[in-house]
Length: 107
Image (tube, helix red, strand yellow):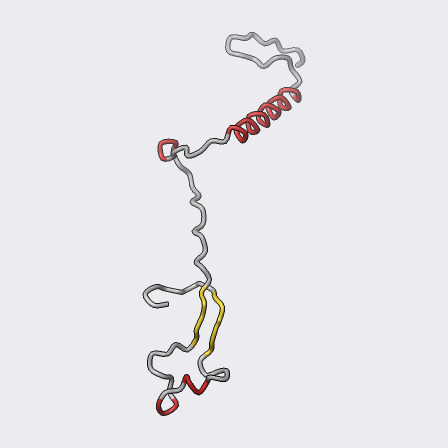
């Protein structure tokens, strides 16, 4: 690749220098590679997409691009079911709030 690095890229070899029916066309004077001729002709595959950016970010560093109402509703429903399951597993009555006076029953 002229002008850019092809390191790490993959491709398909189209022609190998000195092989095939037209091998004699690849030779220059005194049986050396003709000046300016590549040793391989390769069709490079497109470069891979960059990996996603992962990390920890403050809310101020992020901007909401899109919010799908269906996805939000599904998330809120799953959270509601999860919270209800946690409350159903607890052995007491209603959750204690600030100012409540609990009484120890066993002990």
